[in-house]
Image (cartoon, rainbow, N blue to C red; front, side):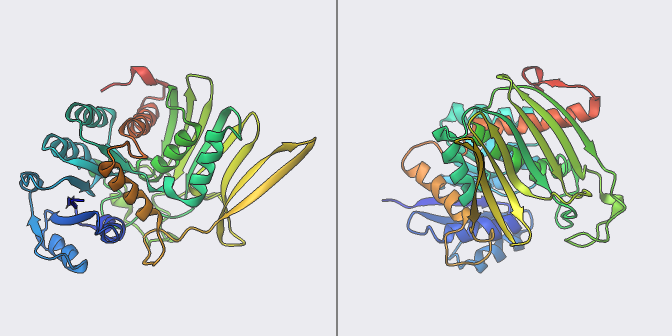
Length: 369
């Protein structure tokens, strides 16, 4: 079997901590040959760290795309470049795995979806939380019908104080938003995926930037209030066409004790499920619950997955995510995260921002450009 050849655009922390460690474990299937970064020294350092021999280094991603031997591109850049670079890569005949979110708005995400369909090249988005042990088990239960019809859900992405103070996270122009587009997107993706419901009716949302001056207790150190120009929290109510609803909560900073990230709570006609953090035991839990023979029950399952991106001899969530993407290309099948699913997530987030700005409920089908 011929090894697939890959190029990486954007050589920052996500490429270094997530993508390259996983790709190095897949050397029998894929070879990373090209690195692109506007600061060429970062591309050089990334290649050297992972002992890539004679890599091709580029400042301009368009130059990288001219290499006809490259089969796939990994895009690990700020959000505002996702659509532009993905479209160019697809049109150059490359398959693309783009880091989340798909794009900063509906128009750009739709363009990515359309070009993928037109070119026949595969596209996926980096929603690695689908590959956690608890997520996979919950998805199986939902698909098996164990919860019945899921008609109410919550998407949780809440930190008490976890504002990212590095990179460009607080730059609205480059990122498109704050906590919602950064971590809220993961929780929303999990809820929609488990419900297997992408038929959206309407979205109502609000955003807040109330705590920009309360920066001393932050997990990642104090931030500069003068450069904090995105929302630190967002809340939304999403109504689906079949009457089901999703409550979305996202925050980098919020006065709450119910802090949990990339988790969902589901309520169905046969039972429910909740992902939560057991602080006393210092572990994540998945709890199935319902009634049986006239009695209420709860079944708790611990999630013993390894911590994301840490060096480990074990198979990480990122390994599973990128491994299935490579297999999807080799076996010519759909990836776990399809571009349409990611498009719906982006469109909902766009609707939340527009609802917050206008104070009105956004009708999903009427939201275009």
